[in-house]
Image: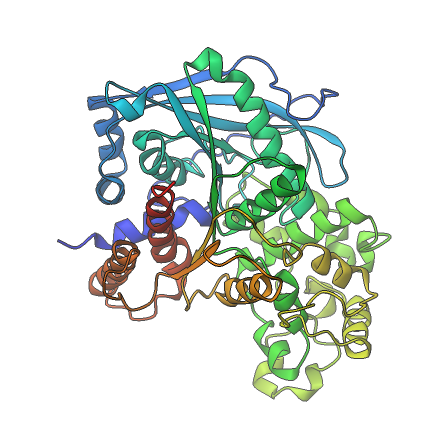
Amino acid sequence: MHTQKILIALAAVALSGCGPGKPAPRTPVVPDAPTTASRGTLLGPVQKVSSLHGESLAAKTREFGGWGAFVAGIASPSPCGVDLYYFKYSTVGAANEPTTATGAIMVPGGTAEKCGGARPVMLYAHGNTRRQDANMADMRPDAPLGYESYQQAMMYAAAGYIVVAPNYAGHDTSSLGYHPHHIADQQSKDMIDALSAARSAFAGLAASDNGKLFLTGFSEGGYATMSTHRAMQAAGIAVTASAPQAGNFAEAAMYETLLASTSSLADMSKPDFEAMVRFVVKITGWQKAYGNIYSNPSELYPAAYADKMETMFPSVLRPSELKPKMPGFLLPNDMPGVSALSVQQQLSFGPPENSLFKSSYLARLMADKAAIPCDANAADAPLTCGATHPMRLAWFKNDLRTWVPRQPMLMCGGNRDPVVSFQNTRLTDAYFKAHGVQPGVVTVVDVDSAIGENDFYGPAKRTFQRVEMDYITDTGMTNVTSDYHGSFAFLACSQAARDYFKQF
């Protein structure tokens, strides 16, 4: 039986921040008051959201329709019920400024042996979303992270793991007015602080930690997972195993190719709306962290938009409400290199006053790249070229090829991923090998590959093949670009990670 087009459409929302079917409620978020509490402090009492056991868990599965049944099937056997809690904790922003954040705790329960007693902990990092009201404790189909929350509940909590899932600073009721997207130092602190606060609440939730700690996440969550494993290893915090999935680990390699040639300039000319949002969110994070991307937003953004870019995201507004507030083009038609493009290609570049970035800023960035070229694809020393432009320095600083894991790690993705290139995984694996990672510590899985004989990850690869084929059958479309990352690869890598962790 086909999983149906709706399965794929709904699975994608976990990483896109867009709602399927009826629009998700968009209630303005009231930020919490700032805090002076030390990092990792539990703020206030933990709130029980729901108790999903037996028929109530089955009802939750039905609430998510065909997709819920599919996830329940690949998560099987899942003998436990799940108690879902919401908590608040103290952490820091990109400049180490004190702030608050929130998250979910999922506690397994039931009569089966693996549902009680001391249990392993799963620290889960969710995927990218522009929604300010993103909340892993809101497990409803019309919630921004509802599908992702349900998936982790079934994959891990219902299988006996205590799941800690932070919402990240800047989301939900966090007092931080921006989200530090891919700021490795901040995201790892945020994850560690959420874990510390949640552990302090375990005793009151009948949750007992057996000392095993697992980390996983996909997309931005994959990046946060690896940065957290790196930080924990440096701090001497024991990690049993991690599974960073489809993350932009080799960040500098991607950014160094942007605007580097006529072809890359043409490729960048018309990104979709969500890509433009990600640029703004990332640049705001860099500016908050390092303070030198610009001295004033008007250096980078045109006058009509400069004063609102830093405060626009995250947001509860729909794309139809946000798009009029954004420029119509990414790149201006007066920037270097545009005149060398074809007349048709030049049409994709906008008037300077209606383009996101100013040509004067981009010209300085391009000049630095031309004067100081960098082989960011190198395996041995990819981050040592000596760039001087502050934006280049920011993406080199947040590239995760600076360490070698000592505890087991699974890197998972799909080789045709159009959103986060699988080259990130290949380059990071090459760096690990060039710097002496011990044999067997790092495993790389391409779920979009042939199933080998006695293939341990065969079930995950079959899931990938099934959802892709069902998508093609149900839609009649062979171009799967829009659903590859957030649907096919996400589901299959989640299954691969779950199977990987069973070994420990």
